[in-house]
Image 1 (cartoon, rainbow over the protein chains, first blue to last red):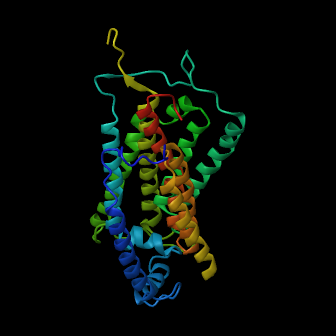
Image 2 (image 1 turned 45 degrees about the vertical axis):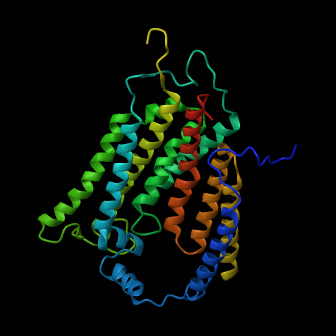
Length: 267
Length: 80
């Protein structure tokens, strides 16, 4: 009996013809890609003027040492608004899809139920998570708040914050995780931060400047309180992204650990 | 400096191939997490630390977690 029985092929797979076709297409694509890549300027040689202008602008006029944050939250803050709402929509979609339906019920998570079926997590992992969670949380807050001075910003710090809380599940503490991430406050934080972003923009509008213009006092480069609205928007985005990430992950966990189809007897 | 980038690129290619060639879904999720870390290393070496930060958290932790939970739900057994 040969290892691959070609006479009984699974439905969905076709014959041998596609392989040569694929190889020809692959070779053509690889050749064209190589041709294009060779024509690019070499690494770390930046020839465009726009980047240099941005760097000077960020430090001189916005008093921030982090050009990426200046672009994200000041010069291109409208695009960041779109990104915030994209994540908000994704989280909303996930929550709506994963809600408890009529033919499902909520049960106790396996590590807390009377008929305990999940194996207890090892002490090594629990100790590791015990060390990791506060450090990650602190690092997330640090990244969000200092986004206008060093590397970081709202999105990066927000994702780190969201994952810090989710780490608790790896320690086997799902019940603790759920107690720390109740649904209503999370929803509130996420929605209010998304709205706060628009509010900051409207405040700028009310002051006579353009929507989302940088209107707070600028201060000194490198200080914590500087660069106008950039740290404010960074913190708002950090909260929103953290809440959205936690929401999506926790709801998917809940779908597996707490919700199941109603039993046949009695419904 | 160019050697470092070459090494990072080669590692990323190896990681991508490894991810595709891993057939079992649970194992593939873990390999994908490792591949996410390699990709973050590449971003760091290409002088994009902000992207690397996001990449580590999202692709290294959140996505394998979500995939494993979805697989567990589909299987109908206990948590991974």
